[in-house]
Length: 111
Length: 113
Image (cartoon, rainbow over all chains, first blue to last red; front, side, top):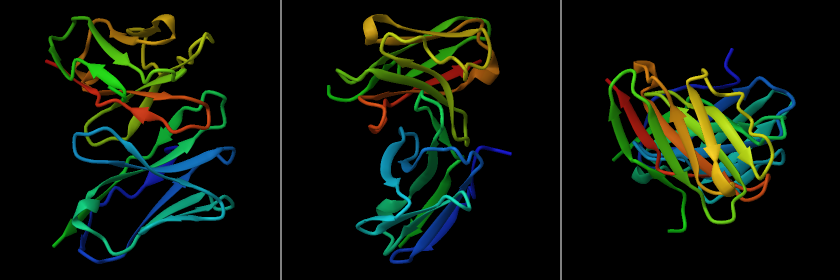
């Protein structure tokens, strides 16, 4: 079993739609959680951190359920510019801070 | 520049040759990571440097892979006797503090023929 699992998609949605991505992780001792965005042939960039209380940044909402080892990302009012691959990322329990990446979920927003 | 830079941006080599990939971190960032991303896959951790501590090499896939970080700044990732399965994008990321965001460089796309 992979340490971080995501549905690879692709998710094809019309502009304005609401879309949700899910992710599960296997190590219950994991410390920190993130969503990164990666555009085609570009490096990953931090989209947002994920907190147990849930957090929102504009049209983006992230949720963490430690009991279920489950992370989600909700995008409201999708824009064409949201088209990208969204990577679920977990920081392990070691001291190194290395990040464990999911395979990514591809989103294509269409006009 | 202010970001992480990597060179070369693209490298094509023949099987069996050695390659060196370079990462210039953000000034002052003490932590440096190497990852690789194969086509259609997520990122795979390779190695981590933090200050003067011994590096975490737990992600290196074989002894053909090695990395150095000189003077706590520039890092080089060396792959000896390259194989076709080494073809991937090699990404470097740096971090100021353990709780800080990791900033990625643009990567080096390695193709082994």
